[in-house]
Each structure stands twice: as structure tokens, then as C-alpha cells.
Image (cartoon, rainbow, N blue to C red):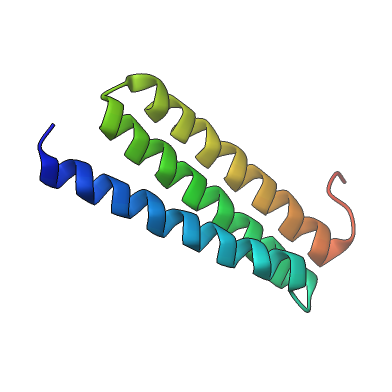
Length: 92
């Protein structure tokens, strides 16, 4: 791996770490439940991106499968939380 790519991956992972901390702060401090759900969705997305970048770093397909699972569970949980906040129930 080239030194440039290694440096870019390190910088990217650091930026994602800062973004997760900011989203975590919003999730804990959000004034409404909608803000908290949106922050949790952002944390799922950043977690998926971290898995993809680590997969590129180590050239392993396992991380890409993990990123796919994170995206799937993130979408389902966001849809369930949105439905719960809208109607007050998840299962009809």
C-alpha cells in the first residue's frame, strides 16, 4: 500500500471518529426524539463507512459484508423508529 493511501485512510478514519462523537453528542442532547433518531441513523451510516474504509485498508471482503449488514439493520431500525414516532406503535 502506498504511503499516500495509508495517510488518507488514517485521516479519513480520524474524521469519521470526530463525526461519530458529534453525532453521539446530538443523540444524547437532542431536544426532540426526531433529532435523536436522525443522529442514530447518522451513526449507523458512519459505522458503515468505517467498515468500508477498514475493508479497503486490509483488502478483506468480510468488512464489506459487515458494512452491508450495518446498512440493512440501520435502514430497518430507522424505518421502525420513524413509524413508532409517527403512530406510537411499530407492529399493527
